[in-house]
Length: 609
Image 1 (cartoon, rainbow, N blue to C red):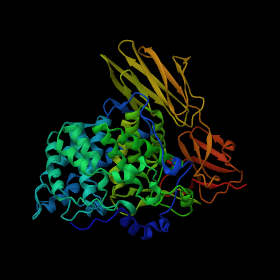
Image 2: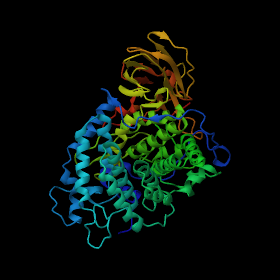
Image 3: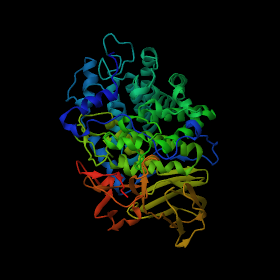
Image 4: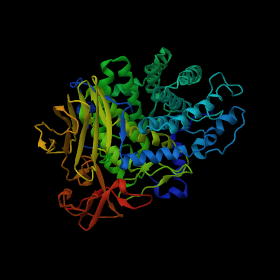
């Protein structure tokens, strides 16, 4: 196999092209926000103090009409529209088989961070979430045809499965292929997927380089350090000890243990997305082994990421780099147009937050999910038929625009359907006698509580409005708690049951809980007051601010705006109309998610005295 090239290598080459001249010249240094890790970069954590909660794992949850369902339906239609033969060309050519169809261009055709496994995963999850067998059947048929090409490469040992004879980043591609197969097995019951996982893992065990190169400077070594998650998921799904043993090979203790000691990962220049993604491997290590240090690691890592790495949007990693807590985050806004690897970064944030809610039962982890829903993947441009993919969000001064990555079928085309499908797995969580509402989106969930079947239907136009109405459907009265997340930005949250005020503790960053004997047709109204807030990018740049309204990051239409009221004049914003349009000093602000292709905007401002 040829030597793996890094994602950064490809992005650097792409940024040199005329199509993205506006994105050239970004630096690879940038940095953190409000509080650094305690002491010399260490955050201490406490053991889980609440009852764990489980996601519904795509079962029983449906998105109803609204922004997120529209995005999911569009993604389903996009992948249904790709001819199977086009996705399989390279596999069949490499195997010496007839290969009708037209090869996809760019990274897919070049076997670069190849996304076939991610497409399978995304299609299967969309099928499960949308209740749409057609897209799931497509994924299964693709895997059946792909399996015919395994072992059919001259000179390769049994189990060779790549798109070409010389794949780039073989660890990365093996990981994503395993993810797709695990999902196919888990969510469709396709048992043959376990046989395929076993076969390609035999090949990987013999053939993948185990040097485990130091993973600084943008995922050197092909992101070997993300393999444990899907191997442990494969073990959990099938019971095959081989997957557990191989997952242990790739545990990234050299990085994970930084969060147990007085270390500062931001000083190391780690690749941002994959070093958040590897924390999901640590989470699965905890789920499989139940050793407390794994949980402590991801709790501490989450706190460090939130306090030192995140912009107001929930985005992170300018120049695809985790940064030191010395003002580099704010400094990066002066020229680093590759501010956030949006689609992949949202996927990694979703997973880590979901694991933490599951393990600890704590509501506050849902805040990052919500920010990424509206300002990350929810604000991404859709995939285009030619493989054009939204890759970076641009937060720079004096302003940016949304553009596509110049390379076709780039890696974010693979995480795009996965992240959008994951909406279904982030809205509701459950405990033995608890149903928790994490996101306020039009949706429904069916919950088997004891011998009762309960449905919740959530109707809302949040965040355009600040309330959501949940209707209970049940055949007979049933006693349980409905909890809802009170975001940390929200003060004065309240609730009504059938029009009567509910006596609740509604502290920001916690679950508000209503214990009740619920009857069919009971209505819970959740009120979450919002107001505009100016949020400094980091401690070193207190007057460099972005404006938020609830979970939504606002942007000014156009470039080069100057604001003059010291400290961030959020309280002077005037809301106009029902669609989150605001006026400040004759400048119009709208949600970042409303901006389309090449529309100019400005997100951050240096507020003058």
